[in-house]
Image (cartoon, rainbow over all chains, first blue to last red):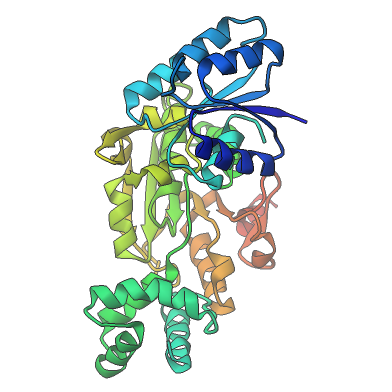
Length: 121
Length: 275
C-alpha cells in the first residue's frame, strides 16, 4: 500500500487528514515536527509527505530542504498544508521542492483534488 | 414551501430557461430561493411566492429562474476535457485558422471558472503558437453570476478546487482574503448575458463551444432548441464539447459525436459537405 507521512504539530489536523488520506487509499504515518519526520524518512521513505509549515523543533521548509538532500529524498511528493497563504511563501515552498500546496482550512474535496494534481490518485 | 409554489417554480423554470426542476425537491428550492426572498425583502420563500403571484413581476420571475439555474463549477472541472483542449483541439485550431481569430465560447459559464481555465491554457500555449489569436467568450443566463465571473474574484476555497498551485501563483494575485485573476487574462474574455433557448440568431462564428453539464438538466424541447442554437453558432469545422455523460442526449440531431473525447461533437453538415 502507498504510504503518506503526515507532518503536523496539531493532533487534530493529523487526525482529520489521516481519515481523508485513508479514504484515498493511503497507509498513513504521523510525525509532530520536521526532525521527527526526517528520522522517519531516513528509515522508510514514504511516497508522499503532507507537510505543515510552522512547527516546533524543525519547521516544514527546513524539513523539505533536508529531505531533498537525503539519499532517495527526491522521490517523495511533498504537499504543503499550511495557513501560510501569501504568494511569496508559496513560491518559496515550490522553489524548495514542494509539488503541491494546500492552504488551510481544507476539506476532503480539496485534499483529493490536490493529490490528483500531484499525480497521486 | 407549499406544493403549489414548488409546482409554479418548476413551471417558470421550464418555460423561461428550459430547466428541468423537480417540484419534490423542497430543500433545494428553499436553499436557492431563500437568498432571493431576503434580497427582495420577503420574510420567507412562501411570502416571496405570494408576492410573485400578486405582482407577476417579470424581474422577480427571472430572479427565481436564475437562482434555480445556479450550477456547481470549479477550475479545470473534468481535467480530461482540458487536456484534450490543450493537446488536440487548440493546436488544431491554431494551425487551421492562422489568419483569423479563434473564437471559443463557454456557454452557461456560471461564475467563470471554465472560461478562466481555458484562458489559462491559451496563455500557457502562447509561446508555442505565437501567431494564433484566441478570443474567449463567457455567457450565462444569470446577471448575478456573470458579475462575479467578470470580477475574477474567487475565495481561497474556490481556487483550491481544481487549480494547480503553479497556475494559481502564475495567473492570480492575492486580494485580502480573496484571489483575483490577472488583468492580462481577464481582458482576453468577453461576457454576455444569454438565454440558450432564446433568440440566438445573432450569435455566430464560433470554432469551439464548451457547454458542459447543461443539456442534461433540461426538458426535452429546450434541449433540442439548445443543440440547434449551438450548431447554428458554429463555423464550418467547429465543435461543441458537452459534458462527459451527455453523449447520448444529442443523437440524431444537428451534431454528430466525434472520437477523441467524451461529449465532443461536430456539425453533421460538415460530413455532408465533405461527401
